[in-house]
Length: 110
Length: 101
Length: 144
Image (cartoon, rainbow over all chains, first blue to last red; front, side, top):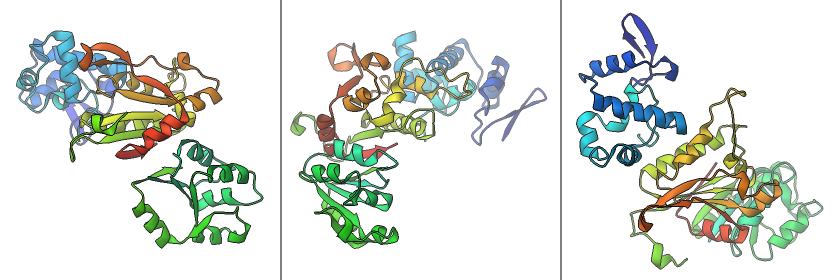
């Protein structure tokens, strides 16, 4: 599959995750979100950026439970809970946010 | 009780050595495929296997011996040669199978 | 060590042990083993990993795969604590045969929820007899 943004084509897997991490840009993230009818707020970016840092360090996209706990540690308890994260990313915080972050589907999501 | 299987020749891989090191006393070891070469009476692993057999029961699959031209008479003492049916029976008597490959 | 104290209710959490016996970058076994272990841990099972034979090389410090053109999947070992994996067993004999000591292994940690989130080492170096006993007491054994 492929994603077409502003005339450029980006390769994705069958669920819309970017095939090449290096294709990622902030504009691409916003475009992917827009396709899902989601506008990237500062709170969305906080989670997406966190995921990119996590991937950079561990080379994996975290499972949702792990993400929730890690967000809580970094950004505080009011953000490290599934209610907050599901409000931001109704398709599932790990899955949806990983997609916008240009990461593969999280390990542990089947 | 666990059934441990070894399917590699001890002359090529360390599967048998590791199996003997990490199988608890009282467990069963089944040699399959190239694993059966370990049981040759004149082979370099005969002594180590016999030592392991003091606390473990050793089996080998007849079809794998035949395929490799190995006569059960040429194996170390105490190896029980079984067919595939025997393999299934053995597996059902054990809690779980751990394969060293 | 008594089963009565630690056994989960029937049908609930099972003890999974992932047995790793291959060096990290010579094939796919090691990376797949780690991925499957992470999946098991994400499903709230009681997951432990055992490193035996060349598997102990997976935990070696300072692996830099950039020049070899490989992805350094071993970075994810540091995430195992976050996945609530509480035990990584390294067989002492395998380590010693390769001229390695505990200092050569990644300093992996986890936070113990039952002890005020104290950071504790994840890796336990264990002798062959104790490891054989642990292998006997698992519900599921997976080999990589």
